[in-house]
Image 1 (cartoon, one colour):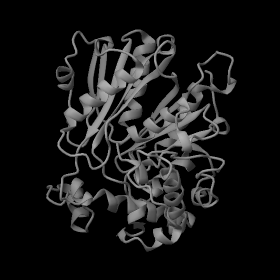
Image 2 (cartoon, rainbow, N blue to C red):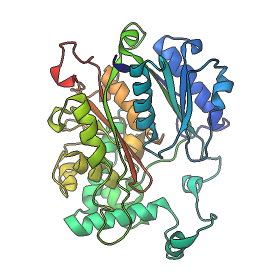
Image 3 (cartoon, helix red, strand yellow):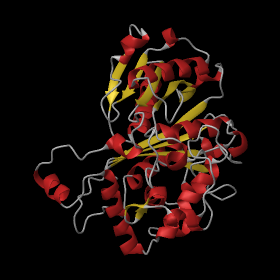
Length: 394
């Protein structure tokens, strides 16, 4: 049996107030089930992303009134969770342990009259041991650690701020065509360079958005999905990578990510290679993350991610359409569900103005921690062995 994604549910995303993560998650699951043309009673599995604060939790099953579930779990691998949840759901479906599993992420860090930067404020937390030493030097935010990683890549390979800016510009080009994107005004490389520093070398336009909302997907068997309301999106391959890089001299921190482990695993399972990938939906918490992830997947040589971005390859009309909905930089920030949702839309051929010409094999990445955790999915509208699109078969 092959697993497929049959339903996608997305609440309002962005500055959405007045609803808790649990309520948003419940709404997203209901939307995903309705999108597939199914009923809540058809679900026999629910996988919930832990999120930043642990909500909505497995109590979501009771909120939805689900009964007699065969699978119910809370999963947590930071931004890699979405890919890991879908992989886990696919394995359960293919093994026969469950038949229809909803996977959901929800968050509501934004508050009225509060800056986006305050949503994930860590200044009041307590620090112990080595973390206390780094905190005393000003490393009290994720921004600072990613800036450190980017600095190391720049020092080793000559990557420039302008090359990071090329990622921001191409991603925004896609976002201008996405009615769900939070940021739709075009930007130029000059706009990127003139945006304020957050932590050097990261400008404001190098950093992702903060969003409220929820996204859910419904995973079931391909046979069942073929008879449902939406075009099936088949889960051909998956993988995880957790490099365990220490932030010290001689480690791979800032130079390599878990994509180098999870990517080959997922592609081998799917029976495809890098040359078969039609488009990428990359977890882009920062512009730098896009570059280093694409390098580790093998779309260019190590250290050449900046040149790839500057060539225009990632934007509309480029040879490697990447983050076609605007990603987390310009679209919306729903952890790993941002690239997953856009991959489903593209694989279904429902991208409208932004629909990429080729969608037979879509690579999806998730990244968590400070480049600590990674998940990869290979998705396709073509069922393996169907004879249409031989490269999308395992």
